[in-house]
Length: 314
Image (cartoon, rainbow, N blue to C red; front, side, top):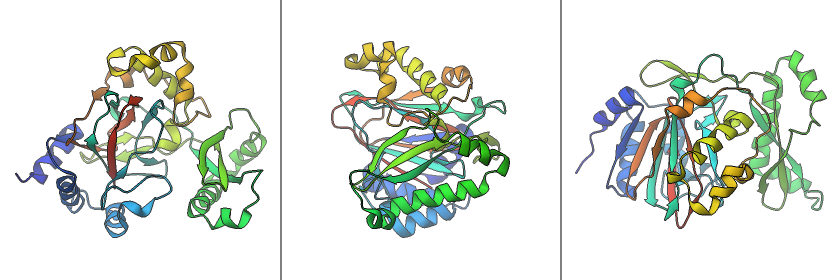
């Protein structure tokens, strides 16, 4: 049965999210193409996805079809903090999540409406700097790595865009304890040092309904201690979305160590209203969730079992 693309778009404009059940991955790709080519949604990011496919970021995800790749690779006991897909420099319009197989325990997605983020919420952008593993002197290989070059380019670009009055604060604070070593490694060549700049991130973007929302990317919320703490509290207050093996860890606060990325700064933002309006979904196999990426942050709980979730964004 063909899917009405216009109906999906109308639902996205009205509610910010649309769900389609009982479809194959091939049908999900047809829907993706229909959405991306629609005049209201078409953009350069879709054009790039169409040209390069799901393999355009191989260092971070694994391609599962022409346009869909795995969600960010993680261990079963790691949570993904709420974020909009993209960074403070570019927030994508559409985020699509397809469930090929769901975990036996856990594996819930939590969506938070960005309408509950206001002008008083402030975020700091975090950036990565790739450094050599002290035990492996492979300088040439390091800087020939696409991921390393990308990270270095992001750092340089960010510093050039940073007001000079903040640059002194950045240089004087580079050795502070909240600047942590990232856990992700670039093969056997390098590791990332992550740090948060002392500047306010750009987060306001226009959604499909024409309104502007504060939609912080992963470079902001992944590393905000207050966001991580609020997420942990929300999950601990809803044991039905958490599995028993980790419940005691979560209640005691030790599970904060199980986040995919470790926080590096504190925003002092109050996220209580954001989580009061959370939408909790455990996708079924064959379900497609289409999100206006500028109206919802998305996150994921820990899981146990064979969970196969694929994503695309543009």
